[in-house]
Length: 347
Image (cartoon, rainbow, N blue to C red):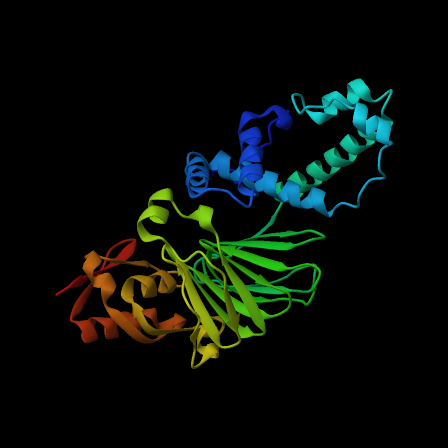
């Protein structure tokens, strides 16, 4: 199994990947950043998973340092006489200057503690998973709850400033405890859902995420660096945030985030908690992604073209075999059971 959180470099301030990530962060914060710079940054992000991880760490560290209370100002003569030019790590420079400028050593120490805290939080999320066919409910320390559907994985990191969750796969219903000072953020593929206190369902598939709000209001933001550079250039996705109210849903994928649509029966979308999967005008390939999280045997398509068949109806978790039978009759298909899977083909 690949380690999602590899060890940090022992001397992170001299690590070239983190140095480059810091340079990109500074450049992107410029209000006049060019399109060429943004595309170059996207290209660098996708060269290696280490690049994306390093950029995320540097960005989190920057946010954490901005949130620290300001230090007492140094004497004016010390500031004007200081010759630090960034050519060496601050902690090394502080050691050389500490005898004459103790305030600099203190600043470096506080910054080091903040950086260490951020890295520690990022490297130690709580992971919750379910097996195929299993549902589970998890209570978080902040009072929120997460209901996990079958074959689902979530990673939770709670800090003083933000409640950060990643839905790595599957489906989950989030009931968020109100905390205006600590946003609740759920990352799912190309989208981040931001709430303060509400209830919403997120379903992550192979190439899309569906967000449905059952209570309150959320903000759905695009995650641009999730998309490959080729997608950004060819599809020009809608990289702008969308607000969702109760009873509305949106879909996020390579085309960006769609406009909100009204759902006639929001409770049907969360009926998976009681063993019923409901579908309305959904392509068969997406329906199978959901059904396979509960199926005793994985169901696959023998012909990719069948994935475009439009499905409306419900699937009882305890009677998936019966649903396959009805699928065969309705679309003149044939389900062939093999030792480890069921293959659906045209007759």
